Amino acid sequence: MIKLVYVIFIFLFLAQFLYSQERLSLIGLHSGVNYNLNYAHENNSANFSYNLGWNYGVTFEKEVSKTLSINYQLGNIRSKAIVNNYFEYMLNSVNDTISKNIGNINIDQNYLQFSLLVRKYFTSLKRIFVEVGWDYRAERKNRGSWNLISTRYYDTASIEPIELTEPDIRTIDSKFSLGQNFLGINFGIGTRIKLSDNIVCTLSSRFNNQVKPLLENKGIHFRNFELLIGLSYILTKSESQIISEDL
Image (cartoon, rainbow, N blue to C red; front, top):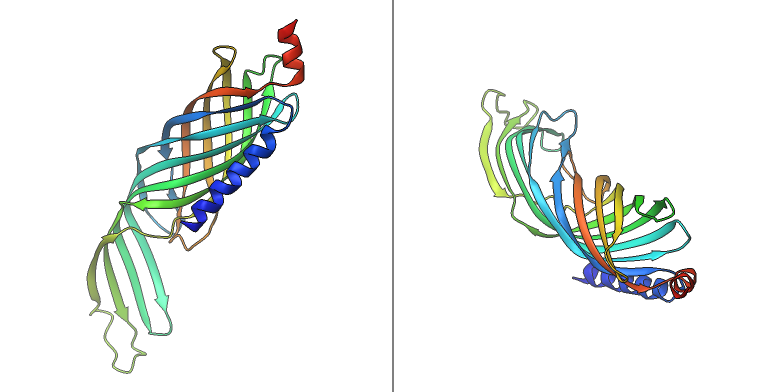
C-alpha cells in the first residue's frame, strides 16, 4: 500500500507542476485491451497460449514544445496467459539433489501501472504521433496457479544415498506467485482527433517489454501488445492557440 501512495503522490505532483506551465495540457480517461506475448528462456521448452486482457486508467498530457509532449498514465491492467509444458531443471549442491518441474502454469494477474511517455507529433495538425517511455507495474491481485509435477533425484554423494531410479515425485498445484513487479519499456504509435473545442479522442497501439525483473521470474519474460482509446479534456491552451482562436 505504501508503494501505491508514493506512486499516486508523484503522479499528482508532476501533473500539478506541468499544469502550471503555459502550454497545452489535457486530462482524461483511457481503456482498451492487451494481448499477452510472454515468453520463456530458450532452455525452457514452454509453449504459451496467449489471451486477451483489459486496461483502464487516467491520463495527463502536457506539451513541452511545438511537437513534443509528456504523457503520464495511472491505470489498472489485467494480464492473462497459459503456459504449457513449462520446464525447470535445478541442481542443489548443498543438499545433493537434482530437481525438475514440468507442467502447466495459468497466469491471470492484475497490475497497477504507472507510465511516463514522451510523444512526438507530426504534421501541422498534430494528428499522428509516436511515443516511447517507461512503465512500472506492481501486482495487485493474482488468480493464477501452478500445475506442475516435481521430480527430485538424490545424488549418491548423500550420507544415505538413494539411487537415481528412485526419485521423490510430488504434484504442485498452488497459487502462481513470482513477485511480478517489473519495469518495462514502451513503444507506440497513434492518432489524436479533436472532437470539439475542449474534447480530444486518442487512438493508439503500444508494445511493452519487460526490461529488468525486480525479483526472480523463473525464466518467464513478460511483454504485452496494447490497443487503447482515450477521451481527454483540454485544461489549458498555449498562448499561440488562444491568440489564433481569438482571431
